[in-house]
Length: 97
Image 1 (cartoon, helix red, strand yellow):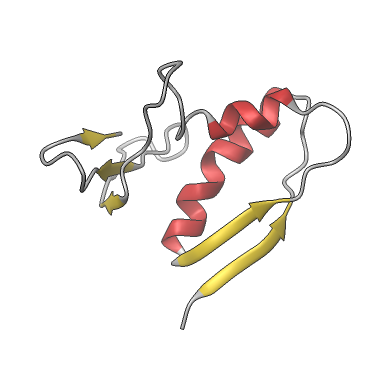
Image 2: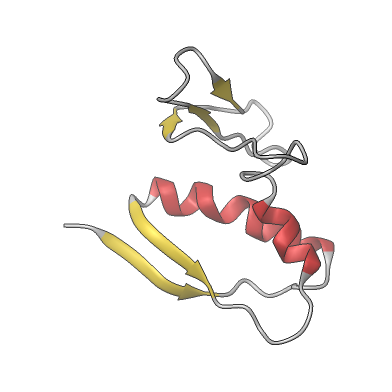
């Protein structure tokens, strides 16, 4: 069985809180073993929320991306730091955190 979130919206589209919420969303969805998710964006601009996606896609200003295999990761300061790490199956030995 696969789980998909067909539409979600975290709010804060034009606020730094929206960036943080969006950047954290893929990690939560991955932990829930979601197969697919889709952002339901409003009409207009939402550059802060889109910046959250750049944490995983194009974060180097080019085509860099987060790996396709999640790695277990932890933080000693859970109240202030959330950590996600991955490996890239197309480039052996490449990890991203």
